[in-house]
Image 1 (spheres, one colour):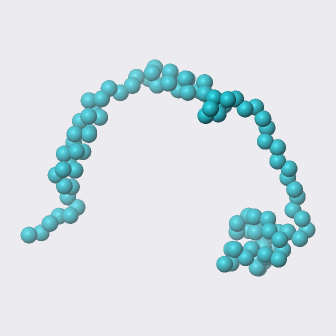
Image 2 (image 1 turned 180 degrees about the vertical axis):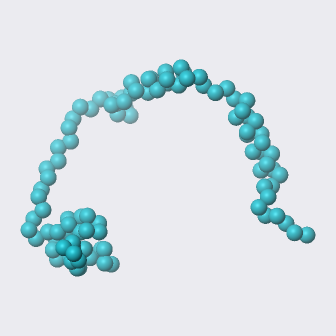
Image 3 (image 1 turned 90 degrees about the vertical axis):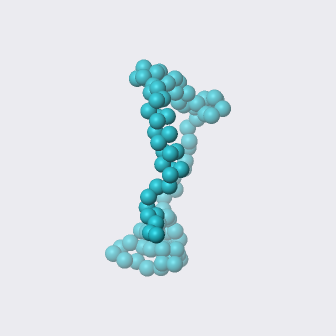
Amino acid sequence: MATDYDELRTDVKESQDSSLEALQSAKAPDAKSVVQELDEADVFDGLTPGGEFIAEELVVEVIPQASDEFTCYSCFLVRHRSQMVREKDGHGYCVEYEG
């Protein structure tokens, strides 16, 4: 006797039907309650998970590329010239790109 493996098993069909019925019978939230929940969530924006407000700036010093460095055209990392494997169309490629 041939078996259709694409057909859903009966226990799966029953669980899908019951979950669909549960979703259809569940009461959907109205628009006002959704807007109220979003407004309450906006109050917590800018706070850390602990509830502490941090008003510090991140300061990063940008160091220009040195004359003995290149930017790999594959991974876009700045590397030392000794790590350059090849140069094609004016773009350098690092050892990891070729590896």
